[in-house]
Length: 78
Image (tube, rainbow, N blue to C red; front, side, top):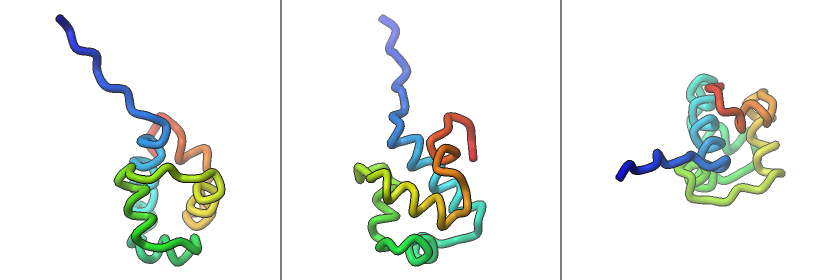
């Protein structure tokens, strides 16, 4: 029996892309959180795919990183 490869969820893809974009921008979680008006613990939990993030929070993070929110949802790397 062949096991299916687990599919990454949209939320998981956002988490991975958010972390990559933050690191590429040279920001710590704390710095990104401050720019987005969010708590550092919240940003960390989003990056670990532990939180069900709202569209508004996605937009705040994307704006803080100066990227389009669509890029953070894309299947390709940011």
